[in-house]
Image (tube, rainbow, N blue to C red):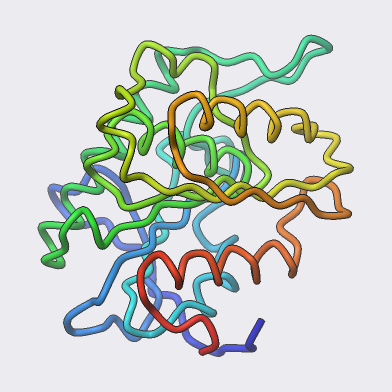
Length: 234
């Protein structure tokens, strides 16, 4: 993946917007598309700066900050606890995060003059979870989504759109074979669910744990560029 020195803006807290966020600079005057990158639990919006820097400069890259503060520069979209039986969460809190992100997408689209077909969401770990939650419940709001070392919440079931609405959607799944936080079986479950829902997806496995590897980033960037019709070699 190319080495870029493109800057990330200071944190923006714009009145009327549902979330604080940063953007990859310089911001294109008339964005060809928009990629929204979501961080994982315990991280923040700067975690995906390297990935943001590798995107075609004609694309607006938005990095929102999760609404829940866990510590200094440690944020989340919803709280989660890990147990022997798997991750445990408050479904109402996770759904609130989904609704907040949907509002934020609408606000960003209005602010920058974007159509839903120009927007892709993706994220690492919990960020991937939220990307899937937004796209699979309101597919008219995005062109596609990426789950990078994440999963699809079983708790999303009541909010899933029907197959006709989901048909235009595209998805990317990237997961480490040795992931000890969210085992690779979650990727298999995501594949099964997307297949049942009729969502076209590209799924890749990597010899890695719970990290965003160079190869995963490269594959995601190529997938995203093909979907948005942008340059993946910048």
